[in-house]
Length: 196
Image 1 (tube, rainbow, N blue to C red):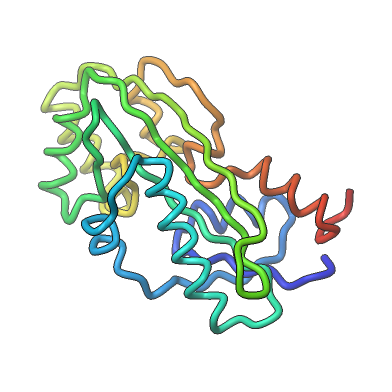
Image 2: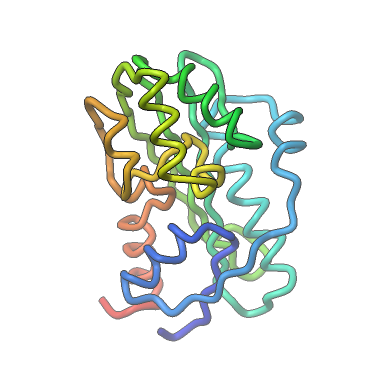
């Protein structure tokens, strides 16, 4: 790679995706108040996801001169309601009960910040239909997955037991995991950052 890459995220899934795609990338968890930004934001979910991704990238880029900083964020929308990450296991169970038997949309935004501005961005959506989960299944699922799901906006990791929650999925797998990887790789190739 011809330029240093920094991921503005504390997400283990995003770090793993970049590493598995062969990218050498430092990860820095951005110091932003996502909850306050969500409360103050007026607009649709795609714009919110991009706003959050850009805020993370911009914040980390301020301390990483000369680097390409990748910011990403994900918003879950179900029947017009925006869901956030649960604050604990009780909230996680309540959120799964509210999503069961319904179809929701995951909106994932990724951007690259370079030289004080956004060089590129992409917003993608996936639709996931959650099957009708019993309370007993939810309890057992959360017991097995543990607190790892608290870092996931949908209370699931599709790369793990979360796959059992769904009856149908439409959309890109990487988008569901939280990073629009293929468009990002395309940008990095076009920019000469990675080999074409």
